[in-house]
Amino acid sequence: LTKVIERMQMTPIGAGAETDTAETTTAANTDDNEEEGCAAAMMRDERKLQYSPRTYQMELFERAKNQNTIIHLGTGCGKTLIAILSIRHFLEKDSTRQALFIVPSVALAVQHSRTLQANLPYKVQTACSIVHYSEQLRKELATAEVLVATHGAILDLYRHYGDLFHLKNVS
Image 1 (tube, rainbow, N blue to C red):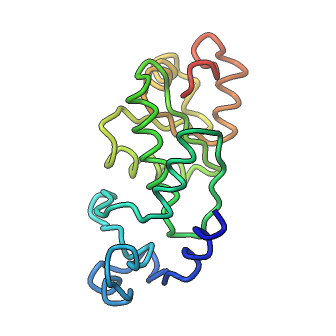
Image 2 (cartoon, one colour):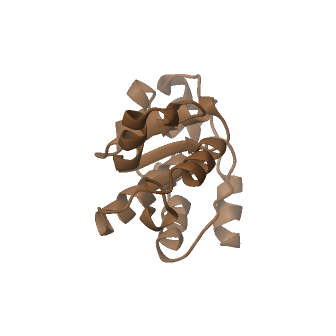
């Protein structure tokens, strides 16, 4: 893992999320896909990711498939792609369970919901602070294959609606 992190730190990061692909492609030194900048590798069209995972991303994904894993990477280095690969893997393995994607803010919940919806063939729902009060919306959240939630919203759902939400249902 140390070699993976060292290799990742040596790779150019590229431009930020707001730049277009023409700028970011020229900003990265590319002999092959491996040297392409992290943020440069994502196309901005409807948040659909348009590139192959880098070696370190695949190594981290393989580790996440086999054990509980916390992935700490810099901004734009592909944590969301690793999450997408993991969600796809675990839901293909057991489609009766729900993937839970926890985020610290409403803005990130909305952002990641859009990205996951654009990149996964599953029903994605977003749980924020007031969404879970309606019985209809609670049922939609409970039946979604992927639930993106703020930490406060998921805590409330588990505390108050244990009949619909329980960790035993999470992949």
